[in-house]
Length: 144
Ligand SMILES: [Zn+2]
Image 1 (cartoon, helix red, strand yellow):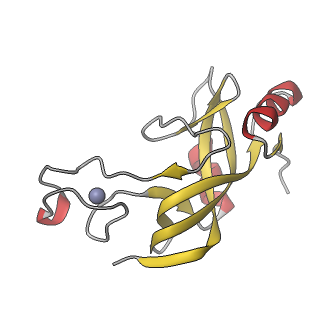
Image 2 (spheres, rainbow, N blue to C red; image 1 turned 135 degrees about the vertical axis):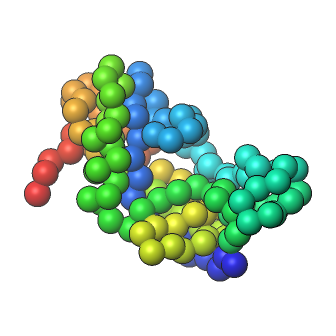
């Protein structure tokens, strides 16, 4: 089951950054610039975990689809630190809304929009490129 969230919730994500563009670390999905990302189910029409068949809106409770985000920055950092050069690693927050499945560690959402970005190992120039491209706050990561 998923709940419908009209007010966005914030979740943490990791990305790999190439030429100032953000890509998801798992599937390499390019994050859209100044536009929302909408989830689709890559398993539509085929047999999927749990015996689910046919096309459905993402996220679906019994499936694994949806835009993933985490509740804690530290988990996002752990994923970001697995990004391999020459790609840069970044963490940041995304707004999530629409149908959202909440799990112990995070969320799977129908819609997401970039909220802010912190580059772990980039340069100030690269963070400016991300800021320009996505029109969000983008800075170099400062450990606390
Ligand atoms: Zn699905």
